[in-house]
Image 1 (cartoon, one colour):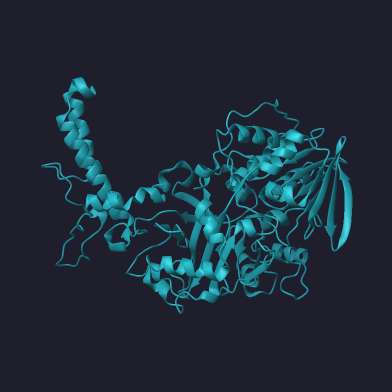
Image 2 (image 1 turned 180 degrees about the vertical axis):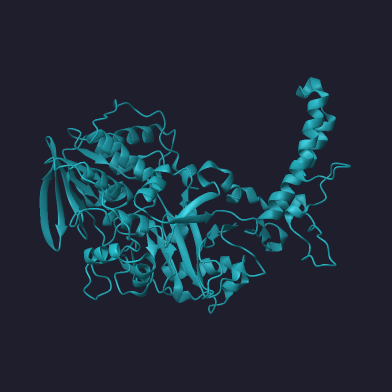
Length: 558
């Protein structure tokens, strides 16, 4: 589909992009000279060597990460691959907003709400997946093989802010003050307990007790004389040093205020968790760059866009698929079929024939979580000013919007402009925010963000017309953010075990992060593609047995 209206086909653009320099191609995308959804930076792309056609056919339903990774693998192995994508773009929930990109949502009453991104050229915002942690080895390897340039993603800086109305009169406090003052008080109290303890009680020898005490002094930056916490430059400086003014620590926050704030309830320590380690990466130019490169690596004509599937029927040793293409009903039988269609969509929009009752029940009942994002173009990178000194990372707030992400790219931009994720929430807060119309979401996000940065009060600095929002439960062909598996729920274990394994004569697979140990992650999507491809292409068929535990989606995504 040609979003620019200038008659340039997507496939023609991808061919052009393969011969263009990265910066020039990106500039074309941003200025609208080519479709806004098209792939920047496919230069240097080498299509993989493929085996001789083996005569086998495979339908892949959905051009999200799992679908595209599977399509490449099957194509390399000599299969005839057909990818049917209901939307006019690749990537699924890996969606990057750039100038001209349109987002559609369907309300509860069936009305359609549309937004068109009006960011300045060269600015973008990831409205879906936003980072690639170092442990996402499949995604990182995929980027390496397809020559997707990466740059660091900053998860946390000590200058990031936390705000709550429960303490400090609602004034936001830097991460460094909360984190280090809390450590100081904990160390002081442990020191007091250590001094009162005995070897009979805690098993520590006098030498071990002394070492433990020394550890606590360093851990909490305690006064080495009386081992009390009186503050530290770790928490920041009271004023800027000069040749006459030496460093002086800021006064410590009071313990009673730290406790009143309940800051730990708002994901303050997220970067201590394995899945959100601060060493992460992002593709240069937007997360969907990965999947545009993947699409460009496939043979011409592999992907059919705007081709929603409406029926899937198991057919002995094969699978029949019916879809709509250009207003015409199409039907074809394939040897294999991999469905990257979210089960939230599959149960509402696709007729399933000859599937087991357990499978149909799992498709009907697998819950999907809500998630929302709000994004802004800011005409000043005020967060990087002397006032805040924030370069990347996440500020958190005890509010419906939950968090603000600062860009990890374009520092010291000549234009002085940048994009911010002005809200990102899941589950209950996402239900509340997602039920609001777009303009109301912007209003709620702006009001809350003003508690962190008063610059948000200015429409000239953060214009409403440059705000974007998305509620994934309302996006056609998505209808949710991820499969909301509950790890120890017996019914969820049964459903997950059912959809994990193929249907028919090993001819139909559900793929995507919805059937992986990592719901909500691109790594999970590639994991599921790997599982299906190994089963079919490599013949590595697992023994069918119930899983001991389903994924714990909430802990993996929040």
